[in-house]
Length: 560
Image: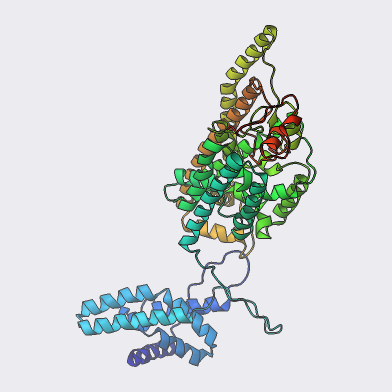
């Protein structure tokens, strides 16, 4: 190797004595304004030395590739380079390692070198690559803090959570759901549900930081259905399915004392006020719309807006963006006077539970035996879920216009769905720009037609540099994302029309009730109304049966 290095120096001296000049080093392309740093010029100079001039013999270039550390030492001796710059030169030579290795292998094969020499060459090459990697510096060196004696923090990676802890979360969820059903339908105990909600708030809320939660799980499930490369974790699937299965049998037991969001809002409730019926029905549509919006964005792989804009999770994590912190404070402030505002008017998973609870096998009954029509339960419910008894008979002259109105509303449903699909198709193009790939493709095409100076090393300039590497792949990926957004927007528009149509139809239906009873879908099964019923007080022995209004018959057992 020393002989080859001396030969290279000898040829360089001959070329200088003959008056020949060395071809200039190829300059790297400039991006934006600013001068090229000298360290990159030195890296390019080393690359010229390794590659060699066009008239240099191939054998000499291959030999120089093998002597990269010696070349770097010689440059340091002759040109007075610092140690850090030599490291940069050696790191730049790593990029030429593959080219040098291929050329050396061909050189030895053409000359019929022995197996021993080939193995020695390969071993030396790998040692060179490992040495270069060990000496590599950061691409962008940190600023100099010598005057302030500031020490850069060490980058740490949080450890992976143990698998058994994930299974523990599922086991705790199953146990909490079982206790909630037992407290609601067997014990009829508000106190038991209260302490269960405290435990759920501490475990699922502050200890697990609100993750994993059932509220955001539908996004993972829908992404797994639309993206074959995404696998839904088993724990997320369990948190999505278990509360829904329980809702099909026991109503919204998850909301009663297992959901940490509802538990936190119950703790801050001070003086509940009744929300007007028209406002209740209007705001009650928002959770279904938010559900469709979150699923549409998750299906396109753009993001999880349900988790991103959750106003309760920043409280559990004790940090978050300023906008979410302000939204969390507003939610708690409203929750002091409106019972569970997030659960009633925003929670998308609550919309799914509401639909499942309408078909539940068991339903919450205020009275364990006979309703005395005292209306005490209506005033005890802070969520407006109690429904009054309906008259047994309706005048025939009122039925004809009501049936006619119901028929027109049923015919209006497909019209609303078609209108929603059309509006969703019109919004597909602007909504697709929310995807980073589509946005980069749009910026790349705009830069070709009307160039804009984004400066040096700005995020926009760096993204355009990445787009220049393979613009065809970028445009193809953007076209695929636009198609996915178009399908998602069409489905979301149809979903909005369906939700509005069903809501209008439901308001025109008559439900026959003989007692005061909670609505199956709107009831959170919090058990507040139990102790307000005189029949319940008689059942637990806190009131004699003779004091019951309208009857002296004592209740027997609770019916579900």
